[in-house]
Length: 271
Image: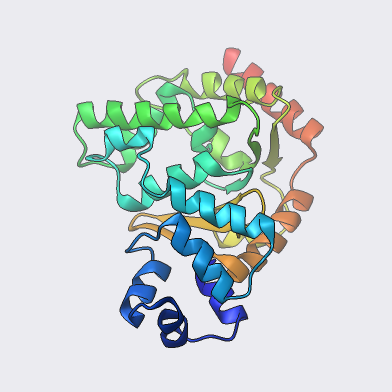
């Protein structure tokens, strides 16, 4: 946001740094999140940029105040990558998350058994103790769904294929996971849609993603994940993903039909 506001003000790194009595490298480190900035400095910098919107001022000052705080997930710092830790931090501050999940159930909706087997099968180098700890972390993240006001709105579109996976360790895992989805869908802040196997082509065929939105002027962030790690898309670059979300939702089954299909699959596992 600081970089965007500087650009909006028509200032270079050098001119902005000079106005603050800094060197350009310091300004660069702040904008690249490798050096913190104090709340008072944020106020001064926004004055240099001519920003007087109270909402923007309050949002950035609060971000600066919170920057040094440690989240509960720091307990697992030896197990998670910096990118994953960053995402948990974003998730904890989010107002809304829209997730397109073509291959697996979103982490915020997974059962303990599903999380353990997924982690064990996709991270072969992990010890059983590490797998258990990472599964515990994944379930701990789910507390954002029941946090007090301001609550989190979570909208997930899951491909039906992800719900046909077999589990070798506990065959009942998928039935329990389907039940979990039905229970979660009863919460007023959670919306679940199913992308049917016979769907038409849509933007989601290019891969899964999570779009995280925040209160006030803070720009959206999109998370992209693969075997090599995670990548983030921010600011104006998230526009294509916002459009993709609309088309993915429109292509998926309605909420009512989605839940009916999930209930039918869950019943099939009982027989």
